Image 1: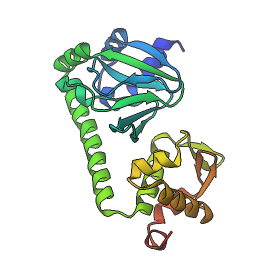
Image 2: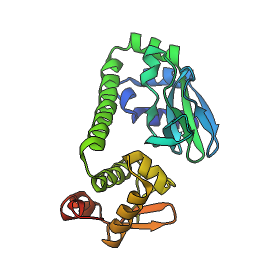
Image 3: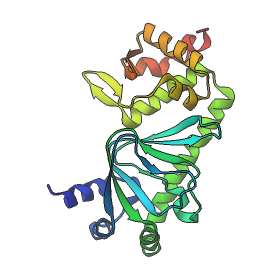
Length: 237
């Protein structure tokens, strides 16, 4: 299968494009370009104007916010087959966060103005886009709520489960989270201290839910981890 057919197959499986005809997808393919990024390479920076709709074909990308003091907070890991940065495409305002490749990545770029013109001619896309943006908003609201009311243990568990669902890889019955997240990264993502995060992960490992090898995390018991919010999450770490 050549690259054009490969990319058409990818477009079919992208939520916001799934309702389009083959002809529409071929048009999007013809307007797009691809760019390769090395590990750790910046895709866009906070404050940059949005010029493209971005679809990750291969690799993984982190979306993050950097404070004035230089502290980085990751709020999303993007996996292959997912779009990112859609919200600013409509209002044209600069990005409020940055994106960087976590590993070698290939990104399909669709020019913003071309994308908007396609939407004007294909109103059915609007419904899919609204659903996707609604999902993102719901995720953001759940994160804010969790930071306000949930214990750190539950926030760590929910983050690991979400990452396993989005980007997890099954390796002989273990689910590997295939990104090298430091304990500080995890702490930032759940709004905790690195010391507390280390204790939570250590206890989850002792209890048999996780296995860690350096920065790699393996979930050994997804079902058990989902039910862990019980005695474990009420106990002291």
